[in-house]
Length: 453
Image 1 (cartoon, rainbow, N blue to C red):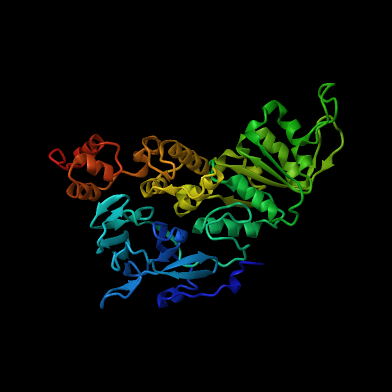
Image 2: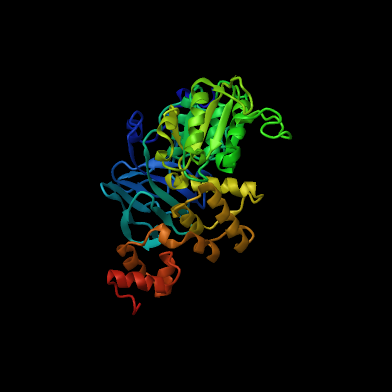
């Protein structure tokens, strides 16, 4: 199979990269979200092992730590891509040192360092924080394996949709692909877990496509759309003229899925009585259509999805699902957001549209509740108020993001912004706050004098 990591080779430039070859432990990584000079390198990453120097490629000074070199992670392989050659970067831009409480960053280059959009000389960045050089690049601090677990996969372009339409190069997305590959050919019922908009149906369709019978029926229904009074007829079908003389015969979802898969989204919307009615057909494939006195057999696999806690399902119904798959939301795979933005823009007929780095920074740090659907809505909202060729952080988008959800700036960030700006209004803007009054409320709470700024 194409993409089998057994045929990939390790070509790391540094000896420490080779040492990581068989070490699956997670550690902090610096992942590239955007580069003005090389946008195609989005998603490249580097494990932060000891003190390293980040900057434009070239020779280092005597006594400098090892220069950070990026890799493209694929299962079982770290494909070396080297340093960035952006001429706007200094050869010595940042000194990075992982610590027990985060990543210590010191700016030694010409252009200013930004942590979560705030200009600082140095500071402690934590997982989920962004590091940037204004107008040059944006990176994400994240925890991920030093080497992705080895498994066979179908080759696809970096950052592009895979054969199942799933987009992402993050460790959590590769973990999902690996779980799907392992479970897809097992003839057991599976529960797909994840928040609204995370892509649970996409995962279910991937399970079906990779199953032993991909040409068999794939029947999908949202349980929340089935009226309680019609639930049994919808699930198991009915004979003609039952319960009324004009009622047509229906095969039902269970009968329609015979030989294939039945995908029930929002399965927790089934009442406990309906969950109990499904137990026999899940165990033995046996069921009866309404108005019929003989049993039927349907050999199908149930893929059920929910964004609710497992306790909302009857314990004996839950026990029928031998496998569970978790579909990560955007907050678990922030490094994939630039790749998803490109896909959304292509679907909207706006491929090639530039994205303002400030907007990207906010979208990456935003806490999503409806994930891909929410990201698409924010893109549409930005398009309405942006220039023709660039998506911008418009007032409407900023209001939707609600900075409080992005995390309150740290005291050190506030002091740094006040010290490096000419007015409270400018400082508030750098901190991503909606106004100087929001800044004043924060400084009053922290006991910082900002009135004379």
